[in-house]
View 1 (tube, one colour):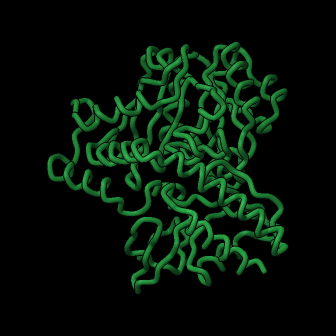
View 2 (tube, helix red, strand yellow):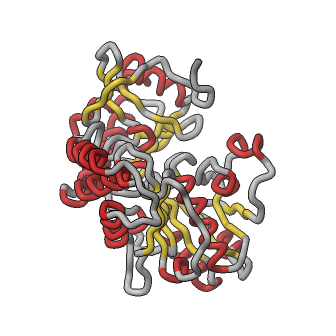
Length: 382
């Protein structure tokens, strides 16, 4: 008997430490995927492990209708760390179990607060696999088998300001944007595009939602990617690295969204153990300036890949990204390169479409780890 959803790879992982994973026979792999950006601090981080063990010994779970100090601490921490300006703060927090649930919640909250149904999303965008978030996801391969999905979704070209302006009107409940498209190939949005989205949604009375499931908690060199543009949305969704491996999602909301009293719930919302992991993760990220390391090492990684491409004539069209969210667009299929990296060089990475290698290593890696990645890339492409 085996799982039937995931296509299992011929590498059985049994242990992890820092940026490394180990198989059942002790083979060491440098992890440049971090399980889709989940292991933000690396594997088995001691501070997170200690927090989980301590909380598990005291209380594994209590439903969110009963206050719990660990959960309350995370509410307060996320409210304080959320992006803010003089006009808007995102200090209302909903906790769930995954990114797709965080986006489902944001979708419901927007429709509830505005009394409208239309959602504007982007081509190449990815927001999750449950039925509402899936409706906002672009690729047919994810959606077609499950249609009909939630209706009243309009897609626009990512980065096209004029097209976005035409789509946002008095019927729009929300615009969902990734500040950097992940699954769509690692495409950062321009500051001008995010500023325009803020203007158009504000004028129309619609909610602006930034999906920071993959970009958040330091991945792009700041705690939230939108901070680099100086744009504060009405809602921000987070997950993946927020609890360094335990399943947790969050939807941060402005007052006007929360004050509309949306009807929503979840049995496992904000369990104490996952909240303990998130508190330890966020404290470490802030206190040790992990986003700063991501910015520095990410810049080094991208520039050295570009230098190696020129020196060795690598089949690379473009290197793009922010911080340690890096996309390498190659001239031939990415899947073979990923296989060769894993089997021949003991480095794990990810795809982002058929021609993009996606690098999402732990945010704690150093330049020596970047050097090893680049050396391996040269080996498998020359």
